[in-house]
Image (cartoon, rainbow over all chains, first blue to last red):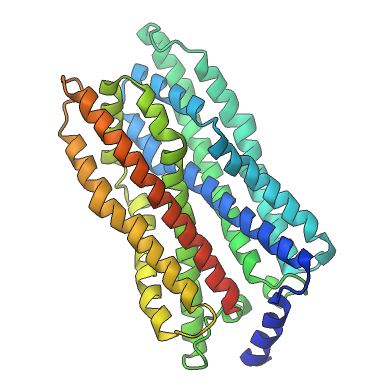
Length: 190
Length: 179
């Protein structure tokens, strides 16, 4: 197929013909941006917060991490963290009638990557670790603090790296999905 | 590789398909980078600075100094300035393909990132970070220096975040309209 006819064909399918296709585009756009934000938040820990706290004393590390874990529970962050999951599921649901499209495939992939490797990983690994850390008194004896930190810092940073990779891949898959026309079977999805 | 061709930025037939594919990839990388950098700024705007502000000033100063020392890792610099490089290609390119379907989005996206994410960082945040690095964390002026630092830093960081997020959205739109 010549490039001009490909362009003309996909341009036509992008034209917002129906209300539903506009909603689909909005949901996909919302999913893309919120997933990107959450990926960036995890990335911020990996490249900035975690290495920055590494040199702190045990008491300082624990007190700072406790504050961060408490402050992250705010409407702004929750809007992106839960919002990404909801945008993704809504986008997936509205693309169900386009089951064989490349876009549906990429949205499904992004759902798996973000909901599994970002959202559930956080809920079942990082959050329980944070709850455990929250019970430690930063004024406790040095031995207690160093044990608590040793049990937390290494594994937490590792799993944060894992969720960074998964949610960034989900972000990439969603940008890819945005590029594909919504309603047709795509050769490009191969 | 059909997707790259399909995503090729159309220059009204003036440029080769290879060049289209290359620029589509640059736009994709830039959109990804802008989104991730926006998320990094978002973390500081939404909760990291609020958390530090609740610590005693001496501890907040020490932690922030350490973060500012640790942040220029290759892993972060590659993303921050790699994205800037990509935007630096896309902005002049948008003028070259002016009138095409994605030119405005390329110009706005690339420009927003360069002005807000890079410009503000260089002009505002880095000088403040360097000034904070000279503060004695356990000294008497830590308290006043910290409160002066955290307020302005956070407000201007909101702008870095908003600029980078809008840039990412605009570059995704550029890709969408180029197909």
